[in-house]
Every structure is written in structure tokens, then in C-alpha cells.
Image (cartoon, rainbow over all chains, first blue to last red; front, top):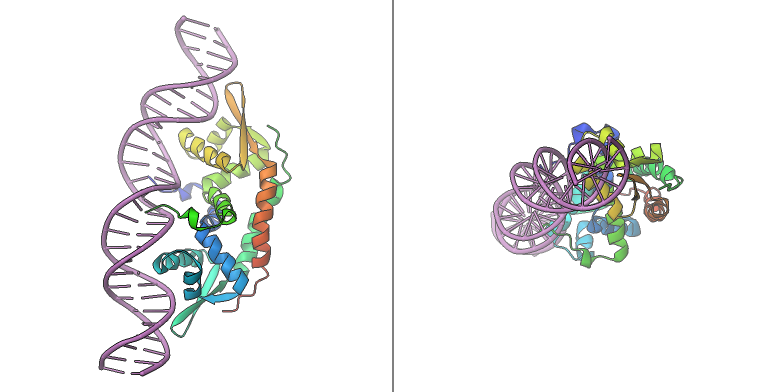
Length: 109
Length: 109
DNA sequence: TTATTAAATCGCAATATTACGATAAATGTT
DNA sequence: AACATTTATCGTAATATTGCGATTTAATAA
């Protein structure tokens, strides 16, 4: 095993889980925070900011890109990454739907 | 390796990542949705609802309990699980802080 | 063309996660 | 006490994730 049984759950449950999962690593949180602060930035700047190797950061960027939370465009020899606003809008609304109910649900046990 | 270098990131980044990570599996999303719908429910009911074995669900419940998103109290022979409202309030505000900025950040690349 | 720089990908090792059956622990019932 | 029920834990197997160095790829510069 070691494999998530995605086929046993709904499309919506899998999508939401994938979004959360992509944000479930401190390096990826740090990357997002950097992009929010700088609006956009070159991959190399992120590598300088974070205490991880270039190849490791490249992998984290790829995972964030896979779920659409960020996008990157080639600008000459380097790649400029930024927040993919529209996906965040959708992600936030999905997450909010759940969280808004959760914070109003009394803990009755 | 295979080990996240948590010590290289801030407490806040690790906490946020751990919350997201706990929600980063469709079974755990499904469990939360069930608890939101029923307000509270016995472990066995969740096992009946989801297409996973009893032991697997017990592990997912333990992970959600570890980060505090749910809590369980023993009632006779069974355990009643419910949303831990106060932790969700804190989690939501942390997540919102990031997401509110993200949805307003223009995609400039 | 030949270098130089930037980023992605490959290959690998270590650890983590997912899942299940079997077993154990705890409670309630007969 | 003996049994049934419920949930947690153990042991194990398969796969995934994390991380790094080395290499490759792509684009510019000399």
C-alpha cells in the first residue's frame, strides 16, 4: 500500500485534499509567503531565501504548480513565479465553505 | 532523507503546514464532512460511512486528533468524535490571513 | 562556436504515509 | 466469570515524499 484510494472518494473531496496537501509542507508555505510579499519573483531568489537546495526547491515549486496555486513564466534564462490568483479564489471559496461551518459547529462531546 | 527539515522554518510556518497536511487526504476530508453534518458521531458510524477498514479510519482519526481539529470522548464502549470548534477558529484565522492576501495578489507573470 | 547562467530532471537514499489483518484493551452484557 | 462489542495498536507490505548532488536542458553572452 502507501497509495491513497482516491477512487473511493468524490472528485470534490480529492480536489480539496490535493489543495491542502500541496500547502502541507513548511517549505511550500514559505514559498507562498515569499511570493505574496514580493508579488512575483525569480526562482533563484526563492532559492536564496530558503535553507534548501536548488533541486529541492524546484520540486516544491513543481508541486505548487501542479495544483495551480502558482504559475511560472520563462523570462530569458530564468523563470518568474507568481501566485495564480484565480485558482486561489476558487480554493479559498472551497476551503471557506468547510471552515465556515466548522467554526460554527459546537463541540458537543 | 524523507524527513521534512522543520527546524529550518518558523514555528508559524510549521504549524500552518501541519494543519494543511492533516486535511490533505480525502478520507480525512470525508471524516470532517461527516462530523460537520452529524455534529457528533461514534467512530463506528464513520467506519460504516467510509470505504476503508476500521483500523485505517482509526489512524486517520488519530491524525486529526493530533493536530486538534477533532476530539473524542469515551462513552461506554464506544468513542464519540466531534469537531474541536476552538481549534478551527484559530486554524481558520491563520489560513484566512494567507488566503485573503493571495486572492488579492495580481498574477503579474 | 564556446562558455555561462538558471532551472528542471535524474538517480539515489532515508524516512513517512497509507492500508490492512490480526491482536489487544476496555467496556458492557449475560 | 465468560462473552460480545467497540476502538486502538501492532506488524507488515507497498508506495510516496523529502532532500541532495550530479547532470541535463535552455537561453544568453563572449
